[in-house]
Amino acid sequence: MTEAAQAIREIEAQGQLPIICGGTGALYPELAEGYHLGGSVSHEEILAYRAQLDTWSDEALFGKIAELGIEIPQINRRRAMRALEIAHLGGSLKTINQTMKPY
Image (cartoon, rainbow, N blue to C red; front, top):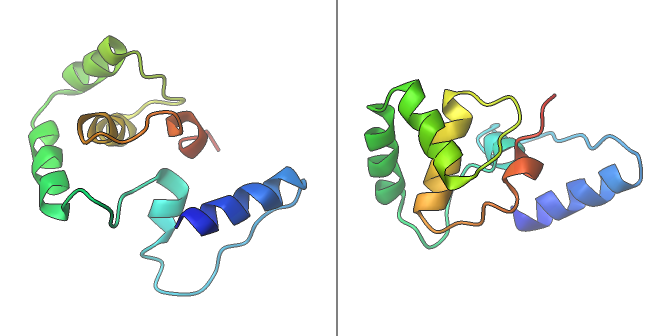
């Protein structure tokens, strides 16, 4: 997905609108929101941490986001959980604001 994301950035840098089509649509969330569909962290580990976060209140999630100094445009529960997953599992938070742009 890195190559696809790079191609999208290059198209946007030219002032053009990239159009993503084809396939089953399973990869669109990864492109649009940075969802992890592979890599060095096991899917089971991601799901286990996500299940743990799912038990937290919105207040607790947003409080942890603030504590870690993560800025998320138009924050909501799903975006907060994903940012915490990335932070917890050792991913880069550098791209959070790039992958979670408001519409």
